[in-house]
Each structure stands twice: as structure tokens, then as C-alpha cells.
Image (cartoon, rainbow, N blue to C red; front, side, top):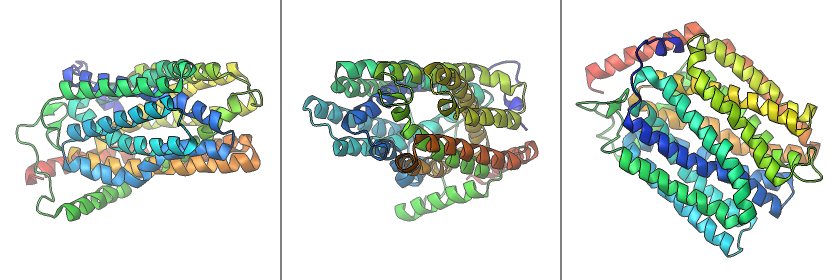
Length: 447
């Protein structure tokens, strides 16, 4: 079975009110992220121009995924996913409130900024992992590609198309605004989930957007909390690493994330300032980043249509290859117009690839294991990102920024070839059949 099966239905099932609540929360929280995406590296640039020190900001953001991803996934499968998401988002808002106070007191420094980013990133691990498990709970299974496309699309619009230039503008008003406005937006996101999603959202409570009359029994109930948590973590890792589709996708995602984080951790030094290759102002840098969102919006709109015409594995190979190759453009043609054009296509291909892989994961992982397998996947994929950020800083300082950028292109293309050799249509079809058989067995045994 391919993704075309998911899009073949003539009658589209409505996405529903609960999906709209998750959509609104995603839009608000990602608008906050978009402001910070531009503001944090520019604030850091005012504190240091060292590639290694700048890369620490990105490393601090992603390090919590390496440290907490497995635990977060197991906890989310054990508890109420909605409640965990609300607590995590409240912690994000608290961190931004502290950052606003530090900015008003003129107390921002690299150590303070790094500490705040570490706590913010830790909260994000739980919030994002929980949000990922809620998508199939509030979305009809036949509309997973469409639902993911819309959510990923609004993420890009809010994050880069609106948030990035807004972050540049707020920074000109003052650093406190660049933290205070995202804090307010996090509060709005909390309200959307708190009011829009009512009731319990434990594993098995909702499947394909429908609340189950008798939620599935969630194994390991007789074990102690520590034993149960450890067992869940091991179970998620075993399922992921033994899966013929998910394993190569996660390995490739981890390698590409490492390469891309190394790339973008020092990218601001290539673009901004009179000593840079492109010589952009901070405001133009913020605008350039929005070009990614233009392509991403198109990708989110067209992904479901493309999946109805092109086999998902073939489409994934195309978008990944194009995306990886275009990362060389800033080195080969270091001017704003060429980079902006390339970034539109990069945004498009990245979005289509994300829609495909996210829908595949949600389709292939049983609902009762979404949290722990998702946590294991996130740990492996995002755990390479702090390493990549530091690697970008070290290589950039030792050998120059072009070495970082072209090395990232090479790594991405090598691992795309690896994934495409293993994730074939036949392998995906067998995995779909195995997942359906496992779900039927779980229903029969009361798992």
C-alpha cells in the first residue's frame, strides 16, 4: 500500500473541530518559534562573532532531544497526552517570561541565553512529542496526509513567513519584545488546547479521530513506575530499530539533521554583516528566511495532490535529492536573489518530504506505541542536532564556512541514497500489512 491509498477516497471526511483547535495551537506556538528563530541568533551575534560560540545557541536548543526524547515518549504513552502538552507549553511560557525580564534588566549574556534555551528546549521535547501523538487522535485516518500537510503548512507560515520578519522587527524595538510577544503567543496556544480539546487523550482513547467506546488496555500496568517506564522505552527502541521502513528513515533523518544543523548553525555568519559573503542587514536576513516558508506553503497545499499521482517512495526520493543539492547554492552563487530562489524550492521539497514521512510514521506505528516510538525516533533524529551544531562551529572556525556547507550537501546525498535503496514500495506494502495485522491482534487480545 502507498500513500495514494490514503488519498484515493472520493468523499473527504471533515477534519473536525478538535483538529481546528490543534491547528490554532500549532499556529500560535510556531509563530512564537518563528520570532525566536530570527531573534536568538541575532541577539547572539551581538554578543559574539565566533562560529563556535554562535553554534552553541543551536546546540542548546536541540540537546534536550538527545537527553529527554526517550523518556518523554514513554511518559506520553503512559499519561494523558493533552495534559502533558499543556504543562510543557506552560513551562515554555514561563521561560520566555524570565527571558523578557532578563532583557529588560539588560542582563542577557551568552551563559544566560544558553541556560534559557536549554530549559525552553526541554519543554519543547514534551510539547512537540505530545502534539505529534495527538494528530492521529483528532484526524480521520483517511485524511492523515491532508491533516499533516495543513499542520506543517501553518508551522512554516507562522514560523518563517510571519514569525521571522516579525522577529526582526521586534528586535529593532528591543530584545524584551522579542521574548515577550512569543510568551504571549504561548499563552494563546495553551488556551486553544485547554478549551478546544476536552477529556482524556491517553494512548488508545482515540483512533482515526474517533473516541473509542472502550479504550484499549495499556500494558505494563502491574509493573512499578520505574520498571514500566524502562520497559516502555526499550519497547519503543526495539520496535523502531527492527522496523524495515522506520529504521532507514530515522537513520537518514538523523544524518540529514546533523548536516543541516551544522549548516544553519553558522549560516547567519555567511549572510549578515559587512564581513560576510552576502552582506545583508539584519532586517534583510529576516526577510530572506521567509522565502523558505513561501515554498513550504506551496508544498503543504500540493503534497496530498502529488501523493495521489506519484508513488510516495518515488516522490520522497525526488524531493530529498533536490532539497540536498540546492544547499550548495549559497556557496556557488552568494547573492540574495539566488539564495532566495533556492530557498523557495528548498521549502517546497522539505515540506513535501515531511508530509510523506510523518504520515508514514503515523500510519505504520500502532496508536498505543506512538509516544514511545515517536520519542525514540525523535531522540535519534534530533539527538544528532546539537552534535551537528557544534560540528558546524568547529569545522567553520578551522576550515571556513564553505567547507561546512558543501560537506552538509555531501552527507545528505549519501544518506538519501541509503534510504531509497531500502525503503522500496514492496517493503512499505509489507510494513502496512504487518501493522494492520498487529492492530487486529491487539484488539483481539485486549492490548
